[in-house]
Image 1: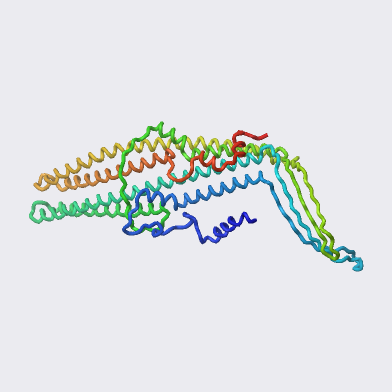
Image 2: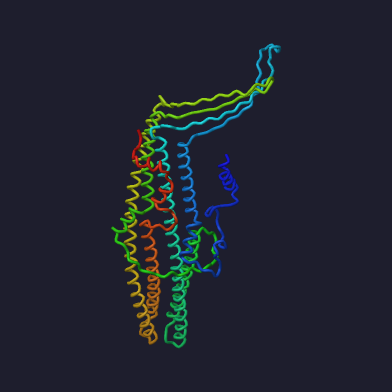
Length: 469
């Protein structure tokens, strides 16, 4: 009772909801230190996302729940001690009132102890299954952190991309405004026909419409970024521009080999397969009896109508528990455990195949984005040179307004493609990192977690693979 005071206090705090863990409520931008005029860096934002994103918070809570379940399984190996006390009032008699006895008051109390001695490996198999589930939950947390980190990076780069596209659109609008003024002057002096003026007005309108579109896309991109941070408001902070680096990319074989070794989704399924094996061991062991040591000490005293001295008794000895017939429940439990083990193996194989496809796509997207960057840079240079030639030709009347519009639109599109390719490359790098299972958060590696959670006796039990009867 006294050892549980801290847990009871934690239960009251959780029940009342006055103090909530990160992710249990929507924080304000002020709590993040974000506001108008502040700047959000990618590492700062990544830390905020991993701490406050609800998906990561839910995974952290599931790890705590799995740790508690493992503790419940461990408790079977400890002595189970209970105490009781009661007060009874009793009276004897018949229908004839003259035969009624006086009301007797009796006080009694006792202690009992029971400790499991032998259950043919069922308890230790249950403990192994719970520990493997705990390790799997820890890998689920790592997966959630990696997914959140990728979503944040993608949203972060999308905001930067849309900001640059807005600047490209603004520059395009400015160019078409200059061209409209030039065309108005040409029409006034009779150097151009009225059609050229109308076309310049239409082109400017289209450029302004495109500017509205990309500005709206920027608003949406910022909203997505707030969601990855766990915010429900946009404090209009600035997004810092990280240094772009073209790091050497691994081959598909190298990337997939690392994913098979380190990807938290695969590791979680490995642990769940082992948990299913331990559950099967426990189901088989449940066919056999269990032997426990039981002891009790009791005392009682009659308080009225005549007080008596305390009387006491004690008992101790082994207890054999065996189920002789359960309607087939135990054998059906074994069949269910066999099926669950096969499902765990199928899930592992399917996830490995899905990760292989994800890694291949990420590698291909990264190479595609790298080549697109090179081509886009050349295309921008070519479009700029072409626009200069067409503008010079247009001023002397050798090019039409259609040629000039085409050249300006081509330059705008080329700049947009260059921006798209540059940020697609950054997103592709983050995608490959996620596909390889590179850890982003603070989840521990499997071997560290296992060493921390397992007691020496449980490590021994784990080594006895299939350690049933």
